Image (cartoon, rainbow, N blue to C red; front, side, top):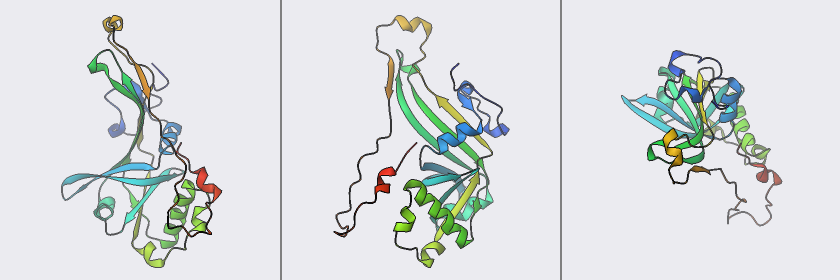
Length: 221
């Protein structure tokens, strides 16, 4: 087995990985590293008896993740009434095997389960949103137009503990059936990575506004 071999025990029976359990990990550092590597998550919950999965920007602060949206959004009306699932997935490569049934992908993923909490204190909302913006681009919040009170009022902010989490991580070459290794078909890995390109200015920028150097510090893990 590789470095992705299961480490430690699942925090709950519902997070215990049953399929491909050798890819599982439950240690906190692996969870945090994957969460910190992207600002995009998907939140799943039931609404009117139907499962909905919503993509959203999120961020981690210590042992909790946060995300925001419209206070009028259906998701924020039901979050505190049920356990939800928040997932993060990162595609690292296409694994090309000698058999179509052994094609795979190299990836890192986290699944969080639990009951979310809405942040209603508007001072705390502003503090957390500042952390989010400055976590993407250092010092950006202080350069922006100050927020209006109404903007804060119509924004919902939720958080979820990362205590109940499981990870799956796959890396490395294809795993073919032993008899297939002699078959004359190319096999290997096509690596896939995020690419951060140079910033493109808004054509309506004021002529005297220069791009802050902190814009160039935007980073995905």
